[in-house]
Length: 299
Ligand SMILES: [Zn+2]
Image (cartoon, rainbow, N blue to C red; front, side, top):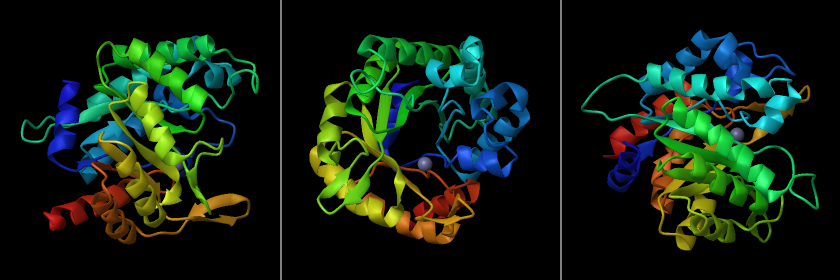
């Protein structure tokens, strides 16, 4: 079950889904509300978003569990619901999956960063991080995910602990990891100063079976980034750009790129070396549908 997503990535360009967070805000998620709690409070909304992504053509969707780790859930006073939130997140994505033997589809358990730092910068030990990522991974596996996807990672120490923990909890399922990079004059770096090619080697050394980049850049800028990643690793590469660069209006980031333009520009990621495409902030099922249409035309 789990290995076949890797096989699929060797055979064709795999289509991931688009954003969850920015879609939830459109659906009424309020500032200060826990997005992952909607797995329990508003399951029909989450199910609807997963269905829309599968209908748009996604081969794989990510669960609504980006912040489903102990540290983030505790900040919402929801630490006691960690198992339930992750398990239910996995089950919702599974139940949205259309059954079609001609078109295999998959569910990825989504794991984001804690928002905190390891010692000495922060208060946590490597072991604490590893254990809390293992805990989240186990709950996602219990809910029936095919693969675990670490995403939007930026810190070398945290992503190493996350990979170790996720692999522990994965019970043999593959673990993928994407990090988020900004462009500077000297290349692409995470906000913690980790360079993109070095990051890919770090992920590979620590057991990631597919690697890549998500968020922070639009597709155009990510083309250049993916070329760098391709030279650094032979693993399958996942590229999930934002819907262009945001403009700030009334303190809020707004993404103005249109789905058709996103789909057209994102195709360039394939020539740069990506094996899987999807969307991050500002994208929605229309963007994935536009990308699916571009991919069909390309064949
Ligand atoms: Zn994003």
